[in-house]
Image (tube, rainbow, N blue to C red; front, top):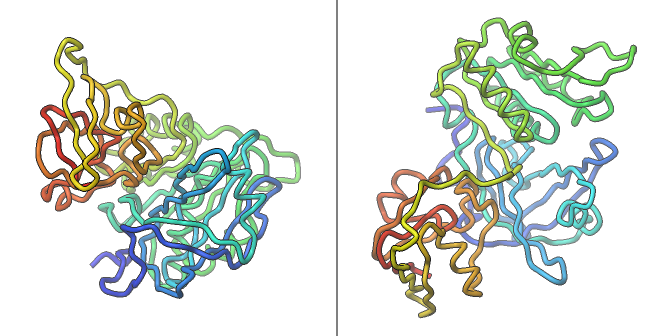
Length: 352
């Protein structure tokens, strides 16, 4: 059994339903990054694997939005979870969390979910590669290994602009001492003379120098889209096969273009079995997009088939799903779909 796999039958928290978490503590990691410790309000145990995320529902007054954040905490502690959030300039959600999520406040959440992390990746030697707030799943991996005594063999390379931007900087050295086979390499692209770590931009040549045995390792990557694109290309050039390169991101830029569609084809009818609501889905449009265009609310967050917030059961009909990352194969076999990445090929009935 993979030592990072979530133990069966322990958690009373239901990951497939919205529940309430209470904020237990808040602390600053850097000048614009804050960590929130959250616990199920009803005291339930919450079981997850390092690398998984939760989706949070926030009432901003004029609208209710949902956002997904990777858990940064050790999966060994099943009474609470932690998320680490960077306050983005003009960011409504991150600003709202920083301003209002204080000890005693509550927040709605669903999950944990996701297939990113060492529990789902082949290999016994890892490269944990992150930038900015993408460090959170890597922290969860190393914290879990330390708490459970897992002999994790990993090089942990984290990139930040300046030393002051390093999240959990004071904890990293302590974690390395607790997990002897983990080598932590912080890299600052804009460092002053007092910085003792690696300096400069993380690129192919720097990566090869820092991790000479890279081709032998399974790579887990998380960070801004540009960073991941560069690391993806570098890893491939340095001999990492696609099956041993994994990444996670909630930095959603432009969506991938779908295959060409016949605009003259008739729209397909989508019906919600429980509510009786129905709407037309034009050619090339996802079920989620068509529902929103028709004024019908559906839960969603990433809109790319990654978070699983919109997951629902298809009762009948046929769809083409462009992304299935948030679904297990057994769920696909049972008929579950992700409306955000599903385009109907026939009339469809959904169990909603």
